[in-house]
Image 1 (cartoon, one colour):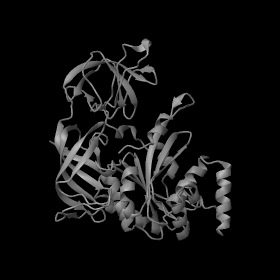
Image 2 (cartoon, helix red, strand yellow):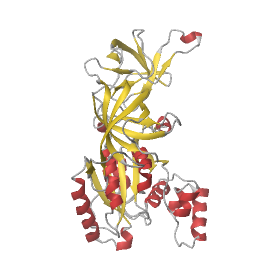
Image 3 (spheres, helix red, strand yellow):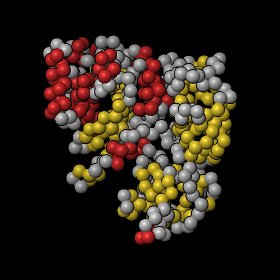
Image 4 (cartoon, one colour):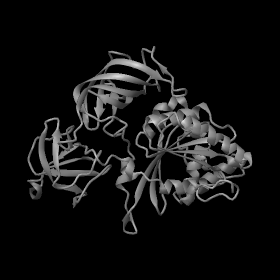
Length: 435
């Protein structure tokens, strides 16, 4: 479920001689909760927009009769989004502060675009859910929290927006805080922060608001800058899916043989003993290269080239791991699947499957239940999954998947399903277990 935000990661240069940290976060909210305005505020206050962009937005706001600058126009890029005032597709925005670089996955809130939200949030370190202080928690708010929980996004922020429209009333905030905290106890949310804000006025977005002296917490940007995400990645279980075998044709590198890919788990160092799956052959790491320079170690989510001491058979789709800590190759997969196309998913259906860098085919053995993401009810009578629905599915694959439970590793625990006839991605899966 990886997306093109990796290009931003590779562009994370150094500032002041130090490599800047990166935070991916996904936003979600119901219609008119102010999500686009909040993102516009973050981009504006972090000086991530050009003067001519701001001038165009100010002019457009005036032409619509607004007495304020409509910051949502900075982010609702599609014409259909601007016309309807809603977010439809996932858009990636980039900005930075002196402390950290950020990638925002701006995801749609409508139920019919659940698949888009799953795509955008699948690689997020943090989920940001907005609610309108006047409306309180809605069905969509709960659904967004459930999806973020299913995707194992480790940090969640509930931003209670439009506090200016309720006169910055503490009782309103307290009621939403208590209700959502109670609801969150049913979900797998390790870290929860609830912040009252006004995206339009800027209250508690970048600086603490004087209009809410009763709130003793931090501003939103301060939390985003300081939330600790390094420990969220699996640094124990070494997982290196091989994407490409590097064999330069230059005479200067005629003996060079490396294996390129993104580290999915653990820490790789020269001298470490590794095993290649599925062959089971072992060797030691001779060196690790990054941008044509040798480095001392590699860890998630770095993209590197690994060289081995022995010339063993390793190709695309294989995985390097530790001999004593290897994933069990599995062909019977139990997973939660989000279905992404109009034609329903049914038992006995055959699809292509892509897991890390390995591809194969899969047969749908059974659909155990469909999950109602609003109530968490499990419909065990269902015989199919429709567009944007999520359910527990049993698959049989033609090739063994070198997988871990999604709860343990979000990279080796996820896969996509592809329609073989059209090449279209039709499903995204989160592995519970494999045998």
